[in-house]
Length: 343
Ligand SMILES: C[S@@+](CC[C@H](N)C(=O)[O-])C[C@H]1O[C@@H](n2cnc3c(N)ncnc32)[C@H](O)[C@@H]1O
Image (cartoon, rainbow, N blue to C red; front, side, top):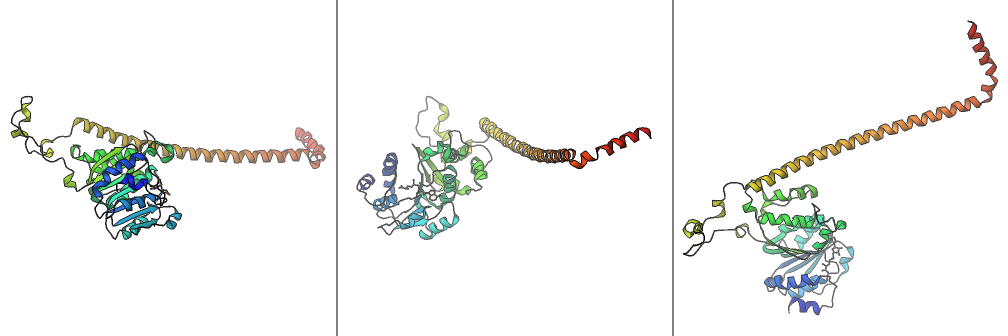
């Protein structure tokens, strides 16, 4: 049965997906349909999509779901290949439990349908992409939230999940950068902000990234399958451009013809370094402003304290002037002043 028919007939645990995803999955899942694969879903909720996948992938070995909601432990599944972990996807202990359930095997399909918050999507990718097999696919759903503030998004939000995924496009084209940096260079702001990192060798395994409306699919493969390879030029006639002469270009690798950094790349990276420097200076200046503000607050508190004490003393003085003893001793004070005039 195909995926759409399975979904039409589904009457067990509830699942929740947009129509477009199902059409895309019908296409990309078909290549794994008969294989003994492992699947991981991050964010399983009522568990309905685990049911669906168990019905579709008849030969799958393990279909594992992670869910942060405690009630997930009460969800019942008929298929014993479905295994569950109740926990936060970001916890190492959750990842360890997943690995234990998969008996140390990696996954062919990983779907992130969890919180849809940018930092969680990115952390999940950095944490679980290394658990994906070569030839596997990593799917991220509901990326429309990447444009919404309440999910740490926004169209120009530097740390949004979509911005992170856009950086993966540069990583796929790493071979052509013409600068002396590692792939992780384009992720450095995310590494800093989220205080986490992914192995450079894992980044080299990103074969492709496909964007659909609200959905991204990242394909993994061994590094040698991801390079551009030989320049293939065949044929006998080159009337438009003689430079395409097969005998000159045939079998060159891109590395052979690339020698110097392109001016454009150079200037962009120089600008980025300048932006980094300016950002550091801005941070330093902001810290100074905060320090001065603290000192100003302290001084203002001192002034307030002195003002209170002055008010208190003035009140005490008024009380003295109004007191009976002050009035009774007035003639003595007058006499004292009179005597002082003659001595
Ligand atoms: C959109 S629902 C999942 C729907 C489900 N995949 C389906 O197809 O029916 C998102 C689920 O992710 C869970 N979730 C949110 N943050 C999580 C986290 N950090 N770790 C694990 N699960 C999380 C939520 O509790 C919620 O049940």
